[in-house]
Length: 290
Image 1: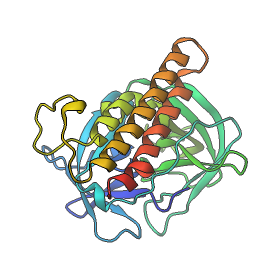
Image 2: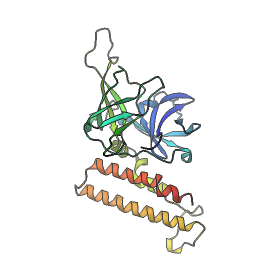
Image 3: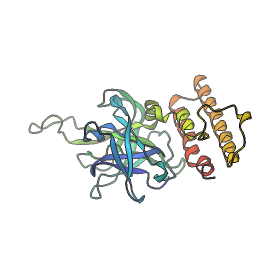
């Protein structure tokens, strides 16, 4: 896995909750983590452990019924260059949560009991979710929402497979306990990464490629490439265009294979996100420095 990629989200130095870098420009979190934000103010700060001062951001998109949100980083150059690998999980995979609300809270880990299951979340939508068993019986998992669910697997490698959303309460409620205050069971639910990639337009891989595609500063309606005059650094731009074209071919192939039934939608979503990650953290990062 990459270095620290999970973050703490704050507003006016007030902790809101956790999240994690899904692409260098975007942080994914649970929407209910933002409930304590000042109404009408979408500005936040993002703290990455070991990455210096906080980084400015703003809430870009909300998927209210899925209880998910995207925060756009306003100064992405200051974000870590490496973003975590994303993948889908399998039943009985071991998982861990690298984010914890405070230094006095334990880290969470356990086993993925069900993957790619349909689950009616508290936001109201039926989402693609992971059912998790947790080894830490702490009674209340408030504060962990928005953090990444990381698969721990030597054979397939570590990868982010979901974002923590909800705890499941025990069905038995003592008479002296009010409804909604029941002790949490050891079962947690997380939204699958593929659910997030489908919910937000900013995570559409075509959109990410458009963001990365270089444009001459003076061009508003660029002429055909054959008519362009060479300029300083045009070699690196040509290499970048070639790299983007190669990735676009792969994206079209994945879309076609999904239509033909060769790959399921969840696998295609994850593979497309990997292509975007490769663009952002690999060749594009190097070429853009030329």
